[in-house]
Image (cartoon, rainbow, N blue to C red; front, side, top):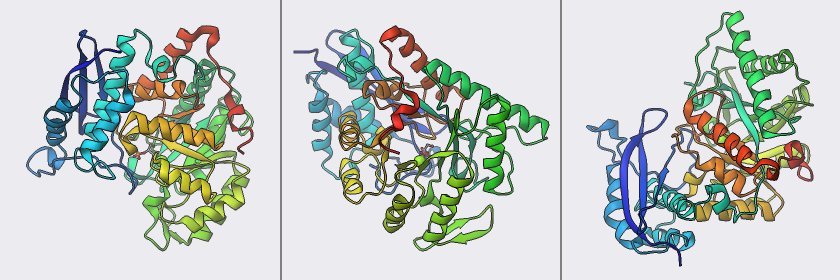
Length: 428
Ligand code: 2PG
Ligand code: MG
């Protein structure tokens, strides 16, 4: 029998965009505490669990989360008081049952996830082991290959480009530490290149640069140039990954690329993406098509499914049922995992396990509105997921995760595993 949950407190804090979000503290009978801080997305999938906001236009522009806090302290707390903190599934199921809706609309996924994360973190603390060890049952030790944003676009940069994330993956890295050094070199080479070319030097929501570009080819060419200038062979040592976030571009009939003033049908977009993959060292495409464009996903999978990683984010929303459908219909070969899309730690773990069982790749991901919580760094190691995406290589809410993984790597010493690009073997 583990320690019992005694007290559950909630606090409204602010995320990396300065928007209100939920923090929860779980206190155990033995005085040990755990906290959970919930992030928030900007390009939110239509099937995500509901983020409960008060909607009062006179308070924090409708974005306050006081009802979620009340739900934690008045409804959830009495129901989980005295439960065993080590029984994460029971705590999570109790909240799922209390809520009773398909998408956690009654209590709010932000309320439920904050408690769920705080429970896991209190459990690890009371066992006096790191969170990755607790969530991974002490056996998982795989440091993830990072996907790091260089240029930010879409909903994270006032639509400077239509594609949302231009990322790099340091394929040639043999350790996590080396992976970050490679990222550092490309990120800062890009910064110098932008300065030299008199371009806008600011950073977007996730810390990537957001200069003015004329078209998407120019962005991709700049990335290749900066990878080379940093001393790496594009494609071989460092590859490109894109999050198209295509649901944001689709009106139900066509895709609109505002930057290039073009309107594309699904098959035209597919043709364009296939061409990009021929012309540039792209190894991974996330949400290349809208979540409701299933025929498009099927067609793109036929073209590229055995060559590159095809990740469903809005398509699957970390929801096991939706991932199962995707597997049955061969829509993708990887799943973006964001705990707040589904709303509990247990369901997140289930989604990761299922993804791995069917031979697909889970990619653990942050949100564009983040906090200083480094829970997902531990989640990545605990589940041997092998990949993580946290935005760019600046801003402390991002660096908190990259740095936590450095600490985990040091803590594991020679027990740390890193397979780098081998993670893609057998998938694409
Ligand atoms: C995504 C994420 C992170 P958001 O689409 O993958 O880049 O964005 O949190 O806004 O959904
Ligand atoms: Mg995405």
